[in-house]
Image (cartoon, rainbow, N blue to C red; front, top):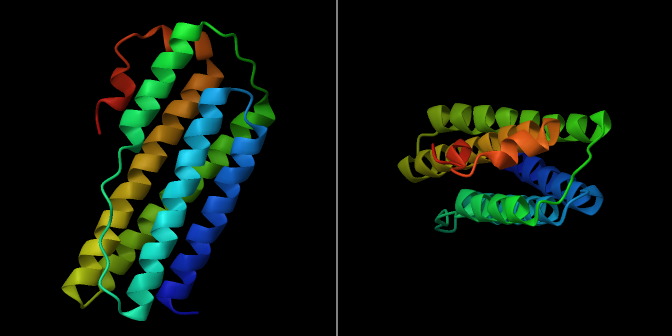
Length: 161
């Protein structure tokens, strides 16, 4: 399997996983966030597919973290009580680990790429996967202690990126 086929499979599986997480999420806000993550993975799939075909490709600027921050603010304002089981947290940790592995894969491929454009795209994809990882870390913290996390009105958790 070549690097593009492997990346395509990673992105396809990630998209499917996020769509399943959206279906089982116990809060509307998390449904939205997981759907956005799935849509981003689909965009990554399309980008890698273009690279494989030798078609010029650009990575679209993402506003995922800005949108997630808005969603978390709305969840805070609703004062809705959330209950998450350990199995839900484990699913989110698995997603986080997938993002960590994807970032490492794209960084490795960027280091191996001889085409400057492909190197740039692989580095950008690694950065995108890192944003997903960061967002998932915040989701895990949120589901582990939702009221404490939501009480932070500044949402400095998402300001780093």
